Amino acid sequence: MSESRSRHFKPLDMLVQQGELALFEQLRRRARGLAPIVRIWHRAVPEPLVHHIQPVLFQNRILTVWAESPVWTHTLRHARPSIIARLHELGLTGIDEIESHLSPVDLPRRPLPGQPPVRDAPSAARPGPDPATGLSQLRKALEGAK
Image (cartoon, rainbow, N blue to C red; front, top):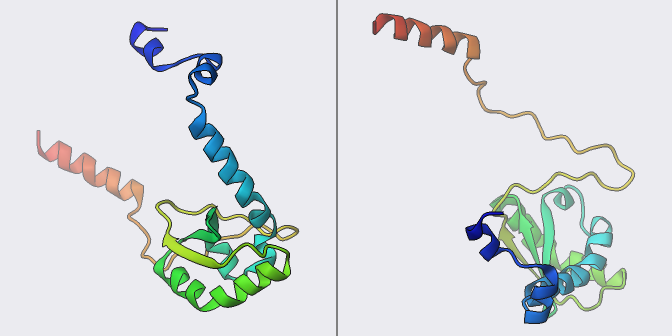
């Protein structure tokens, strides 16, 4: 390993001794707090909303979820009271509020347990150019430039 890289990487036992694993411990605690919610999420959230929002953080009795688009954020706003009530019925009484934010990334499309894979709806966008046509146009343009 090069000298510059070795300065950035430390053996795990050295990190433990230096107390630098606090971030990993914090992430582990957050994941543990979110795990029960993720396990029953598909039972608490109605279709089709369940496919477009995802819980990402549970802290201070507030569940934060990411939504694929503003449409799903708006839909969640109307379904929020019934989702919280359903989570309480399923034993998660510590959730008082659900905050939604637009996802910074595309959410993975996961099927519900026992259901076929989720398929995206066909795109309404116009089809892109034919690659063969584009290649022939590029060749003609290059030949004309000679």
